[in-house]
Image 1 (cartoon, rainbow, N blue to C red):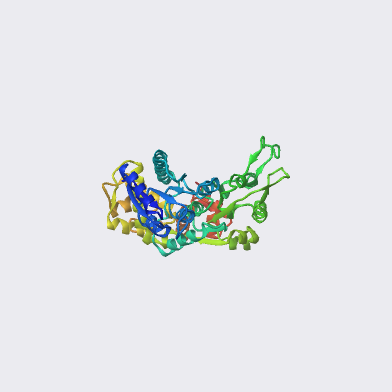
Image 2 (image 1 turned 90 degrees about the vertical axis):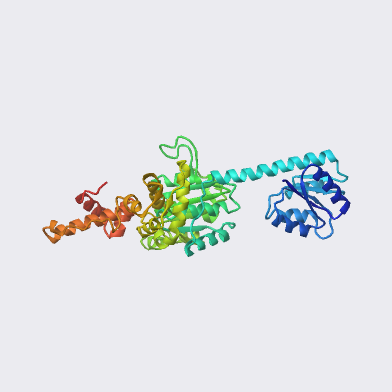
Length: 451
C-alpha cells in the first residue's frame, strides 16, 4: 500500500488531509514537527511527503533540504503564505510541487497522483541503470579489498587524482569505475584510454585531438579524450607505456587545466578528473628514464594498490560463485554448485592471470562440467595448458643425453611459462627474465616459441 507522510503543526490540517487521503486508499502517517518526520523517513518506506513550510521546531524548507541528502521521496510543499519566491525556492531544493492553503481538493489529489508516478519512475530508472551498468561489484572480504572499498568511499567524492597499481587482470579498471560512479561527476562521462594500445605517434592526437590538415591523415578536426571527458573523468590505463612527449603534455594539462590540439594554437580549458593505472613499477621506470617524476607526483595524490589474486585466495569462493551465477544467467541455465573440494582445488591453482583468468576458468567449468563442479573437473578442465602439480607428468631424465640438452629443455619450459604469465608481451617477458628484446627473440626462435 502507498504510504503518505503529512508534516504540519496544525492538527485540523493534518486531520483533514488524513481523511481525504485515507478515503483514496492511501496509508497515512502524520507528525507535527520536522525532526520526528526525518526520523520516520529514515526508518519507514515513505512514498510521498506533504510538508507545511511554516512550522515551529523546524522550517519545512529545512526538512526538505535535509531529506534530500538520504532520500529520493517526493515532497509536496504546502503554505498559507505562498509567494512566487517561496515556490521557486521549494522547486530549487527538490520539491515536486507547491500548493497554497486553503487546499483545492481536486488539485491536491491530482498533484499527489502525479508525484507518486514520478517517484515510481525514479525508482524504476535506478533499478534499470543498475541492471545495465558496466560497473560490477568489487567482490571479496580480504583486508586488501576492504581497504580499497574504504579508500574509494573517502576519495571518490573529491576531485583528487588517483593512481591505481596492480598486475594485469587484478581489477584496476573496476576500481577506476567505482571512483567515477561514487563521485559528483557520475552523471558526466567516464572516458577510457588504453595508453599501451595506441602507437606513440598517435597518442597525442588521441588525448588532445587535432586540427584538420595538421598531419597527412588529418582530413578533419578531431576532438581528443580530454575534451570528451570535460566535466567527467578521464581514465588513463597503462600510463607507464605513454611516450615521454605525451607525458609532458599531460603534465601541462593537469597543471593548467588547458590543452592545445595537435596542429592548433588555441588553448582550450578542460575540467577533468584524471585517474591513472599501471602494472609497472613507475619508480623504477623513473630511474630508467622512461617516466617523468613530476608527472608521477601529479598523478599519485592518492595511491590504490590492487593485490593479485594469489595474495587473497580467501576471496576466490566469493568471486567464483558470483561469476557462476552471472555466467549461468547469461546462458539461461540452472546455477551450478561448487563442491568444497572443488573450491579448495581452485584456491590451490597459480593465478597468474588474476580475476580475468578466474572468470575464464569458471566459464569453462560451467560449459564442460556436470550438475555440480567437482575437484576432478577443476583439475581436468580449469587450465589444460598449464596443469597443476598433481596432473603434471614427471620429466623422463633418460631422454637427455647431456646437461646442455636438459638445460635447453628447462629453458624452453621457463620461457613458455613467462609468455603465459605476461600474456605474450615480449617486452615484459624480457624484463622479467633479464634479457634484451633481441636476445629474447633469438631464444624464442630457437625453442620455436615465437607464436
